[in-house]
Image (tube, rainbow, N blue to C red; front, top):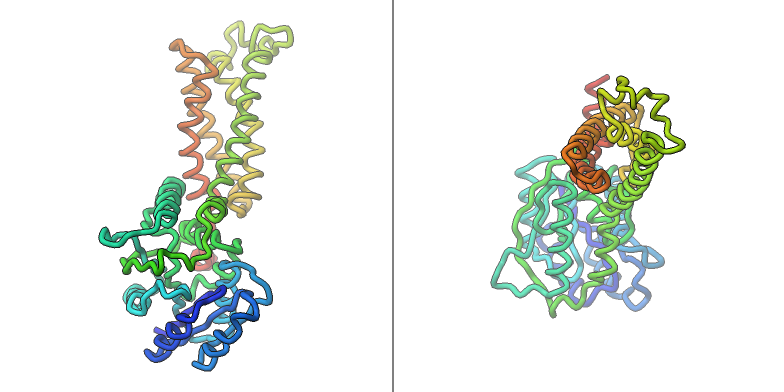
Length: 371
């Protein structure tokens, strides 16, 4: 297997030259990206280039995500026999032995994305901001995807060539890019394997450009998008439910109950009841808005089949919600409290099926098999 090591570098320190020299001495091909650190670092990149390392440059700082995409695009276009790319940081926190461990794991698991996970060694003191940031995103990531990855922030990863096109076009410019690729693994149906690497922190991790708060917000952006769109739809749905249950399907002055023959025991009342019918009407309004938001802002995918799938899911969720809400109200629960309780439970079910079924992209291989 032909492997290439890709190193994004922003304002690297002197040890980067020794790090690159050691990798070259062991026969590794390296591509590094100078992410606009400035003229002060030109000498370091000049010395690295003299070692035989390919140096790509950004005139200004564009962020780690953009640096990785620049490097991946170059490798994809210019190193045709590269089967596997390993990304590593330039600050020396990824040992050469661990880089080679990731390469070996890639050889043993063809087509699998390899993740070098840290933070398992209890004898190593992990800086507070690193422990806090990774613990927070690890928990949210598992809730959002159902996948268990211990170290969601590691920069030591190995990518098979088959997903280079997806990685090159993946949204994200800075540290959120690395989280975005993990969030897309289920969409690409990409297998992954996390292997343990040594935890190394030099000088209490002072050389890192990761901002625990700001970059954690960026990283969680994709997850938060679904929460925001769902919350917006929920608010719309809740007020629509109040409108329908209080004024439309009620004894109020503008009630349309008589038109549906509800009060006299018509089919709608017999089948669903006024509360359930109000639930369905409210969900029809909010569901339409929710589909558009998730298609355009969250999952950023959708075909004609996704519309059908969304309708099937929406109808199923709507029926379950309507029956549950109507039943609990008949048992004496307050209809507005019941609405919140039922929809909160259905939120997680709805997200799972939208992610795994409605907006899940089919891999090219699957598409070709269907032709």
